[in-house]
Amino acid sequence: MPRHTRLVHLPLSTSDLSAKSIATQMVALIAGGQLADGDWLPSTRALADDLRCSRTMVAAAYDELVAAGFLEGVPGSGTRTTSGAAAAAAAGLSSRPAGRPRTDRARRPSPSNGIAPERVPSVDLRPGYPDPGLIDMRAWTRAWRAAAARTPTTSSPWQDTSDSFVTALTDHLRTNRGIDTDTVIDVPGSGAAFEAVAAVSGLTRCYLESPCYPAAYEEFLRAGLHPTFVPVDDDGLRVDQLDEAAGLVYCTPAHQYPLGHRLSVNRRAELVAWARRTGSIIVEDDYDGEFRYGVAPLPAVRSVPGAGEHVAYIGTASKILTPGLGAAWLVPPRPLRDAVLTYLRERRLALSVITRDALAELILAGDLQRHLARAAREYRHRRDILIAALGTHCPELSVLGVEAGLHVAVVLPGEHDDRRVAERLTAQGFVVEPLSLYPGAADREINGLAVCFALINRVSANGFAIRLAGALG
Image (cartoon, rainbow, N blue to C red):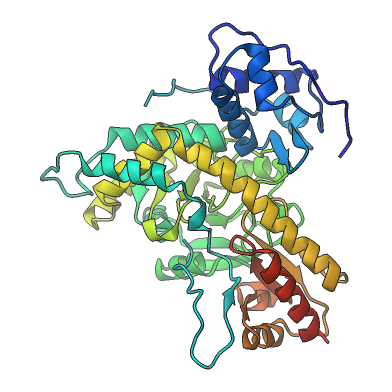
């Protein structure tokens, strides 16, 4: 990344100052060329003094821009614009996409970090685990207290509607994913969303990434869809490999599960065009799209023009906060909205009211946005620790998916069987997932390990890298 002179002054208007206005003006400066990729920004204290506002307001604006991918914090150095921020801003992306005004306001269970009798300590590095220790417990407790203080009703969760939840989630999706919608449906986990969309789509076949997320594959099989695997490369799903038969297309464009590639902007547009041409439905599983490291934010597939009729967007709290919430949300294709609602209500699939209310409190109070900014900084640091350890002890290995999410894919040389390597690592206390066991992997002879860095530290990262080198001989 190019280095530029550290800025000492930003030409920001001081009328009607707020964290929102500061962030909006800074994106405009990036789009207009006054701020280039890699430019250093003033400290929050210096900018607050310059604008004659509170440091808290400036810090909130920086956190928002870090969460959106326009800025990055460099430990010991300061804050600077990311590589690709100028292109993203010039393309019209924002930390707060245009829409209605704001109000005032898992993939697995948590691991056990204990020591099994007669066994070495186990460090679980399989994908699916965020670090709940990063949650601000004061904000968390405040949100649940507020939710618990509300007067209970006689309605069941699938009968009850929550304006505050819809307002909060639409706000979250606009701010973090560029999606402008007024229809957000709560579901008890992403599996319920897969089930509902598959059931009402009227389609008989599905296209799946090769390799793909096992739970999605299993859900679509249960729905009676006939799977076809489609390869991915460095730019994500190979849209040119889709045929002209209508189907449901399952993809993880923000961070392909499990290889970690990001679906390019061009392919996002091509995928939507293909769906419109063939009458297909795209299921966009955005399981960890809030976390990006030093790269420009890419628009969700749902935000591509014309996508609203063909894209089912699914998000989850499992990576953002904890899988223990069992919380996910669905933005259905507009033509399927009523059918999806009917399907979920008839099967009584909904979040508990108190969980919805607590999530709404976290979002509307700004606590979730602050959490995302803090967590992104910490996860980036942990990712760097893992990559450095692998570079020191296993320099011959390629590491994929480093730009986003909470896990990477470590590619192994062809002479090593990833299942045997994983067994050796497990025997030495490090649990990882072989890539060859994922659905669709056999068609491509994929050989490697999926490794989560969300719960790692310097000691465990070095220990893992040393034992991986030993397992490879």
